[in-house]
Image (cartoon, rainbow, N blue to C red):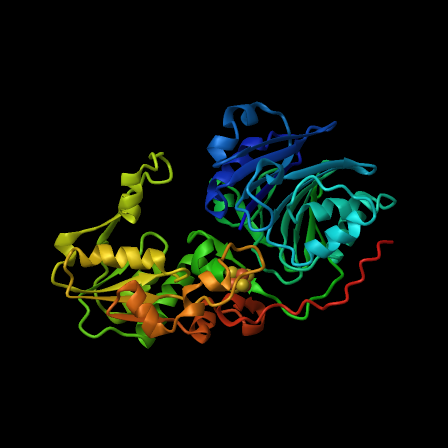
Length: 457
Ligand code: SF4
């Protein structure tokens, strides 16, 4: 999972601080590295580093740099390891000009393309799947750069939401299956592309629209110009997990509020898996909170913030000593005994992946002497890995792939455990079934349409 952000000013207004702020709002999508590439009319420059946005980039310097177009990226590695060479945007200067690419998603045919291109002499500098896009473009140097990009995209399979800096123009592109979100925004003379609408809010931009699956938007002095990738997908695969967990709750994806969707997930969960005589509902901080509110509203029982989260975790550094390791999740979370003792509670979490976090939190809640603990998961069991840009573990590490519900109930230490069904997940999101990816829940992966013609002309 990664985040991308791009900006273009038609009046040469500096935009790099906007990009910094946009990445800051997208920090939840990747914490391993951050970078920005910009074009000053003559040359392409980049600033990149490992770690969080404020660690990797220098805001004051960026604010002073007079570039009116640029793209940025926050990275969480799913293809290629976590090291500097893989930090994005990836840049290249080739026969037709300068290009910088910020990519969110995973290409499922990158290995095949890489082997094909290496067989023809290409030398790769990173292990990132994104680099194949640059090489595909370079192999078509007889075409104008935009045409080379479009024909490179035609050869890709899997997930890509891109912000591309192409010879001083900004390009937004979303794969024909629409796996990852991508939105357009505007504030006066500045046009934006962002992974999520929450990143438009931080720069004071108004949301214009989503980039449609299979659409390429050219952003230049004339504003937005829409083109399309000529590969037509049979159906879309918008990632259900974006609504369940990944996206920020204040974002709107394809016209659907993430926060309201999470509350609806909780509504369905309460309707289908009620808990008799529960005293209150608590959300697993923070990702389970909207679904817990939805559960409480539907069930007509109180919602309590009975687990406190240390707000400074993630912003402050604590030495990983043996004592800190033993404390584990208690460093971050602490149940409020006065609220929990002697009471029957429903704990709502967004998903259950390895099961270890739920296990630790429920064991901590048990120390506060509740009468009963009922775990409700606002998504179906995660049984299959994701190949489209989300770092889910292998099948062996997925708790629900190894254990049935009763065994999981025992593993996490809950009195009862229940999940949302796939049908209710789809109903809560509200998109047609054939436009949503639920492969990690049901194993129904995208049809890869084998036999791709890689011959480059
Ligand atoms: S497999 Fe799961 S996480 Fe991956 S794109 Fe599909 S729904 Fe999203």
